[in-house]
Length: 257
Ligand code: PGA
Image (cartoon, rainbow, N blue to C red):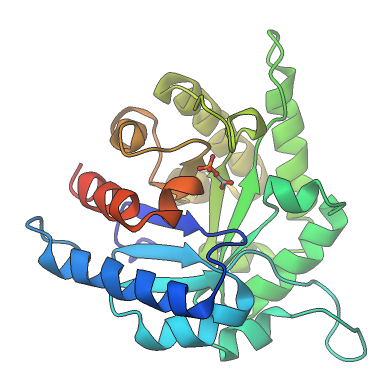
């Protein structure tokens, strides 16, 4: 896992853009900005979680990033209508996937669902970003215990040897899609708690090296502060990844931060 170039900058397009033509144009412009960057960027400088239908087309033209999905189905292969399983996404060009985004959880995804999804995607050797985050905070810090229990349940069907391809994204739900991000200090404290939780699940060596991201109202202005002071290895970015200028500036600002 340490072979991934850091920081890991992941965009989440959600249900944008409206058309494939716009998506292709975005990737061409983004790659051109990466090529023109005065700062030397790694060959693959970004990850973009896009609508599934766009994956093969974007994976085909993207030279400077990894293209992935925003969710997978955890159902057994075969007779289930309307589901896309990880091996199908990989064969269509997906390099990675998000699992457990709060907007997916809000539509009814359970920890058991997540565990099936994680098991399938990690068995398929797909880099998998598990999103976790509290809805609200309490002064006593009980939410940290809730996050630990959530990670434990979500990983219950995953064998330890598959954890190498797992990335954890800390996304406080109260900071997603709003105006106020967590502070780097607030992020730092939770990242320590998440690593402690992962040490209990998978051992201290794993907990020290697993890559952890921050997401929730990341902007051009605050992105770098999370890398520098928030204790994370990268970012998961919604709105600012849907604007080619903002996303490319974040990529350039954060690499070498
Ligand atoms: P935001 O979204 O950056 O627009 O807050 C983050 C996310 O949903 O992952």
